[in-house]
Image 1 (cartoon, rainbow, N blue to C red):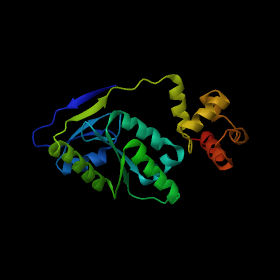
Image 2: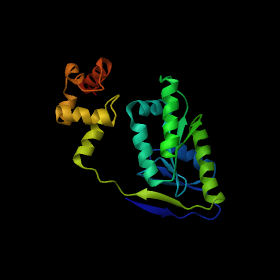
Image 3: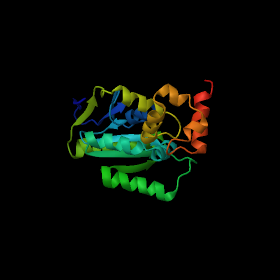
Image 4: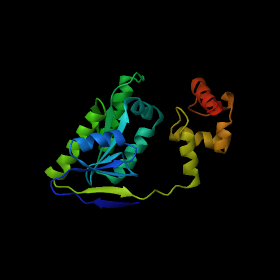
Length: 217
């Protein structure tokens, strides 16, 4: 994986946007930004050679705290950009304790040098990203660069990511499940009683995993 610099027309704000973020991209264009759509390897939006943005709906943000994905993403962003930014969009009824939420935000700030910003909707998110990019590119005169190429992944890593797709399963529990059962197929075929033998999986989570594994599409 390597950095690729994006040419910026004089006087214009350019934002590199992951191809899945079409709604926010349309608002960015409405605000006057030049949008460069691509399959980004790091983050959802790149504002400069040092600022990368990950957008999360509130429910996904809470879920990523619970299963540990949040800090894995933050680590990856911090490896490639000086200033990671998490934008939390909207609100949800997904429950999390105040202490857990504040602890997660504090960890992002102190360990990953990451900012956490709240927005109301995709339009508000786009406006926030537009100003981040404008301050970086026109204020500080920084260039825009994105990470291109795909990170190589070995088979074990791919297996862990597949199991991580199960509800409530983060990287650590994914590894424990694979060590316990030996394969992805065996994890998906495990009964509730066997799942509960894995550290970190209680009765409720075992039931959820078993239900989603057995449910017809």
